[in-house]
Amino acid sequence: MDHLKGISRRAALRTGAIVAAGMGGFVPTRFAIGNTAKVRVGFLLPYSGTYAGLGEAITNGFKLALEERGGKLGGREVQFIAVDDESNPAKGPENTNKLVTGENVDFVVGPVHSGVALGMVKVVRETGTIAIIANAGAGAATGPLCAPNIFRTSFTNWQTAYPMGKVAMDRGMKNVVTMSWKYAAGEEAVTGFEQGFTKAGGKVAKQILVPFPQEEFQANLTEIAALKPDGVFAFFAGSGALKFVKDYAAAGLKSIPLMGPGFLTDGVLREQGEAAEGVLTTLHYADALDTADNKTFRAAYRKAFTKEADVYAVQGYDAAQLMFQGLGAVKGDSAAKADLIAAMEKAVIKSPRGTFTLSKAHNPVQDIYLRQVKGGQEVVVGVAEKALADPAIGCKMG
Image (cartoon, rainbow, N blue to C red; front, side):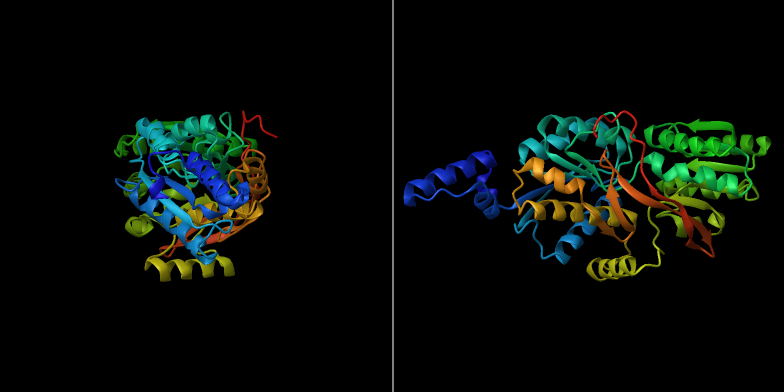
């Protein structure tokens, strides 16, 4: 489709139809026209900075799923257009417009950062372009800002934290301190845990929020030691998670159980070393899931990219599966938007994480696993909550 650059794709298709009619009296149907053009998939992901590895994993997972299905969507070839979103919320709308308006993509896949997601949502709500959120957990994107053309194959921040509340109570923790960076993802996760914990009868001794991306925790850890809670729930990710878990152990707090969403250990477990032993986490995926689908996926990913898959690769893989099912149902006719969306809403995704469906707000209805670090490995203890759906407060769909 590069030769169509500079004019709108649909205008070009209409022109092609007119020329064909004049030459032979044959007017292709909408399906026939669409079937000859490539499906344009836009990746709005970080390819630089702290989250570059996450963007790469999502892209790899998507392409692996597509390759396993013959390299086509609804019978059509696929063209990828990637924009580095730089994990910069201020550039979210601008970078989305590069794909939606500048490149006239059929789908947007991404992003990682919740702030970027809210910028993306603002644009696609106006244009009607179908977006599949492949990581960002911002609840608002499928809550008050939900729309028929916005889907999610990852998680909400609430969803990965809420089940830990009951887990904590079941393990005898009645008095817990919560802690996070003061930004949307962290505050949503802490809120989710606190809802689950207080519902089960627990009491939150104190909520501690520190500026993002501060990684100096000593004063807070001293305060936690003085409070003597039964447990600590913390939301941190990346280098912040690495530093917090190591500092927590160094402060002599290992006797107080530490728990959080899976991002507290995912991607940094090896560097955390002994400090992470015993940490409890909840997430919609675990590398060690003992299922045939997960083992097959991980082996294929390892063979294709010579590295291990992670939760981000799974989310990209499932974004492609959702698109594959939707476009398959409409035989590749991406212009049949209502039928395409209806098919995506009914999709049943057989994922490495386990089979899941979508809620009326287009969030995954999925199992949340309880994991614990034992012997340096993330061990799956069990299912913390089955088929959990985000409440999607504020969403008017359905």
